[in-house]
Length: 240
Image 1: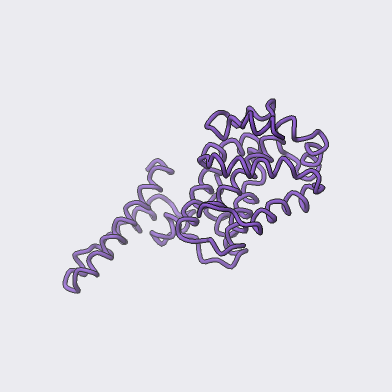
Image 2: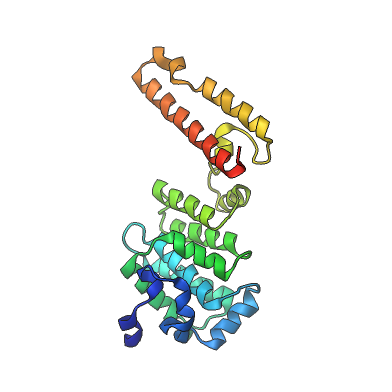
């Protein structure tokens, strides 16, 4: 293990995450463990990359406030024990990645991209659900954490509907999306979206509440900007 700590992991220092397949950590993830992943989670293209990116993402989510609790670490272990049939003696590389992640604190986006390389079409929703679970264990699902989870969903290509269903499983509030801001369904046509956008702008224009005082104007202005940002996001995604 000391050799592994000395060598470090290139992906956690900003280098390619895929390098672990032939690097120090790759040797630490045994052939037996890889076979377990293949058996329990069919469709994975790179077991080393999958295992490592999952642990890094969950650790980063858990440690947003600076530290990860023992219960959160146990939850990460539990995923591998229950879902991938890990033995306690096989959790060493999981613990190693947790510790390296805490030390280096990598950005989530490139790690999410590597997860998609390892698993292009499978288990994206599962990872996002695990992210919610990790945060809810210690009641850390605050505004900043929700923002990070929304970003993660985007990087993992998890759609609004699937993301919303994941939230429902945890009895959370409705997911705010660009479509919900405009009050339209995600499957609405372009013209319906444009019509809703114009109606929202008109209804929430700051001038409509100017007579009520500064606080109302400020609130309306923020809502106005939110509507514009939501439409802009839809505009970009649909090429309007």
